[in-house]
Length: 423
Figure 1 (cartoon, helix red, strand yellow):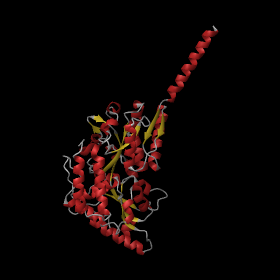
Figure 2: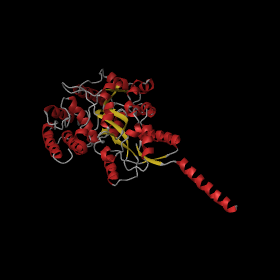
Figure 3: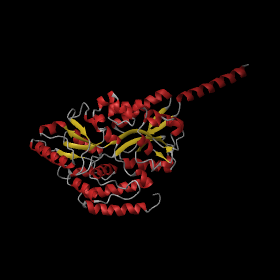
Figure 4: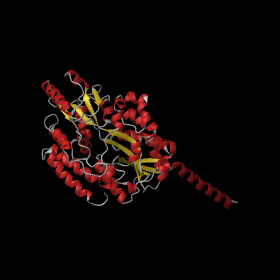
């Protein structure tokens, strides 16, 4: 009898421990932001998911540079690392890392139909849904409403108008005592951000893309050269020479301190500019980027997606987390509190979202019709093509070459990349 009781006790303990383990769930490691509001919003949403599911979420620390993030992920994938389950990927990466991502189609169960079709198509490679849209992006122009009013100016419709207005206001403010005032800040460091900025300039001047949809190299043309030469004219005049080393946060830092008339950046900067401690709170406006002579406004398509590593030991739970983070409720919260552009069209008609971000409604077409980078047509070679482009643009901005000369060299560089495998 005592032996039977002992066995029953052991059985109960084993079952009890099993119950505790079941309740504890699994641990999912996610990369979805490391600092600032990126981490704050991701932590809030993952904590909510943890409370709902009983699973635990760990956050992987990643670099801030998109190029460095991609490099880290490629190293982890090459090693078939199980150290990360959910990865945040740039809109241009699905074709680059397609072999390492899980097909989310069975887990989405049709939810992808709520999102912008173009982004879903971007994330679908070989019939596999490799990532769910998390937020979309397009470049926009920030401006100081108070300063333009003070000098009797209006938001510029062309780059020529921006140049003239920036110079007028900058000179006036410097004479009034602000020696740090700049006319225009943007992303001009030699990295992916410059690819985005330069593609906007080129496209707005009618210079096309870097590589067209058929795979033909199209960047070597007079309109593209004119666009880069125009931008080079800003350096040391309306833009500080230091802009050649600026990323998004560098530009935002100058603008938000009240030391620039205009800024090119992504929508995320809006909520930060309106923060309680922001020197420019209530003084900022947002409009579409200017157009080139005879061209039209162009904004580069940005945005991030969430995907599941093929090497995740817990793919079901990881996919469930992705579906939660990209849901309408979470996207609405991120839009209201952080100015992250939703990938769900219905949210652009949501009263709460529009109250927090008035320009979302006015610039809806800008976000929907943003210019894509040639990631699909160049596939795994995109990173090489983009690096060649941003270096060519940086050479022009820094005065090492004129637009025509730099783009002729770029044409040959991309051609050599194209002759290699996988294009």
